[in-house]
Amino acid sequence: RLKEGRALAQDVWSIFNAANLPHDCINLGQGYMNFSPPQWIKDAAETALGSVAANHYSHPRGRPRLRQALKKFYDPLFKRDLDVESEILVTSGANEGQYSVFVAFLEQGDEVILFEPFFDQYLPSVTFNGGIPVYVPLHPDRSKRKITGDDWKIDFDELRRAITPKTKMIVINTPHNPVGKVFTRQELEGIAALAEEFNLLVMCDEVYDILVFDHKEHVRFATLPGMWDRTVTVGSAGKMFAATGWRVGWLIAPKSIIQPTLAATTRIVFCTNSPLQEAAAAGLEQARERHFFENQLQEYTERRDILVRAFEQLGLSYTLPQGTYFILLDISKITYPDDYPFPASVLDRGKDFRACWFIAMEIGVSSIPVSEFYCEEHVNIGENYARFAFCKDTDTLKQAAERLQGLS
Ligand code: GLN
Image (spheres, helix red, strand yellow):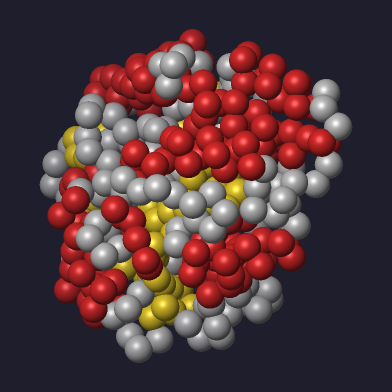
């Protein structure tokens, strides 16, 4: 299976890696911060390293302190009394958690519905486990210059048609990478009705749940009537605490989903790294009293608005993010010389790969071409967009905003 399709093709993260770009190029590509977690959380990591226990294996379910902290944080959000033994599973990043769910539940030929654009990791994670991705594109309204996630619409007839007797699972990502869409309650209820009708498992990737802007309502799919029993929700310490390299994530789901997934994760990684679980626990324990998430959201709103202003000034179309730290720019009108010396890895992909490469080399700001998040058949939708990450300090973003004026 590894020999088939895109699995062995060079992934977008390594093509648009800072190492391949000019050293002074501002990196708004891969979504990671150019700042560290707050000192008090790093202190907790250091304290953990000072203890004997936190230098050794954790329980494969996750360290008790972190599971307790997750329970305390999520109980009110899920309106449940989560059981730390059977309904919370710590994983080595959200990515490994999702992978383990696919390992646990997919059988050869099972179909998994992915909304396009989709976070690229879902695709190989499904196919490596014998699953078949079935794509349902979100439809952007291209008639307006400035749109939001609400203008990237689900066609529910199309979604229904995508469901077959082989459909096992549907993946939702809200807030959505790369669109920045926060799915509306109505949209999620529409998906819930189909999940019920066709008895589907639902994976709801909510790793950007603490980054929802402008008081938009973030609805947790698992809280919709009847959905708890069929939903696994995915979370991430990396996104919460500016610690993407820590690889600490978690799953929240009923025992019927956690138990098989625990079996998978135990065989894949055995357990997640111990000291950083302690640090993530400290983060969750202290976040509320320190108003950490409110302050962080305020900072991200300011960061977002720097790029929004830059795109407004340019007069280019963009999608105002309702959540996440990504913003999509419509690059369909950006021109570049046909004979530009593009590397082969860029040349054989969508037009957006060339546009993003050109912008990185000539304007000095890197971004991610969005066709990577589409199946081959729908590259024509994705290649109109570049994704810029704004999880960077404001000085860097202001400098990037200035450089981007060179696109006019
Ligand atoms: N989630 C991050 C992004 O979308 C990084 C993904 C990755 O490196 N696989 O940029």
